[in-house]
Image (tube, rainbow, N blue to C red; front, side, top):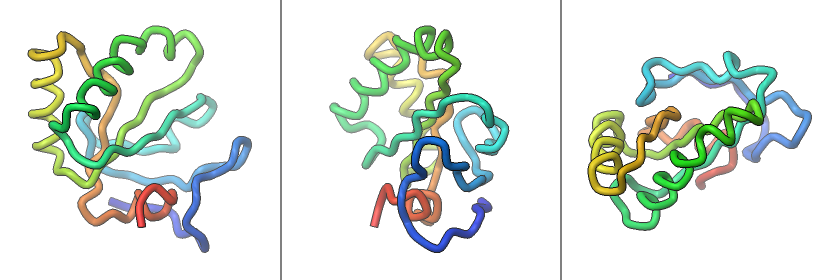
Length: 120
């Protein structure tokens, strides 16, 4: 995982260029700058397989086509491993009948979450 250095830990403001990073995700290798020119909803969750997170992810997945129409990409992140994310996506598909197609980033070192002010 690589992330551009920043001097403070906070979410970028609308109109600011977000610091680029590369990381493993449920969709393969991910690089944020490849989404440049699109709106991005970048959100974190505390843990895979939790009931509230599962239902929230399922609902976001059901709304995917609406976000696509708005040229908006969804991007999830947690400290859980890629393998946990992949198993969780399968569980959401089976138990909640929702196909999570947006990438979920693994961030076990918390470097990305910290750089974006998502976690302390």
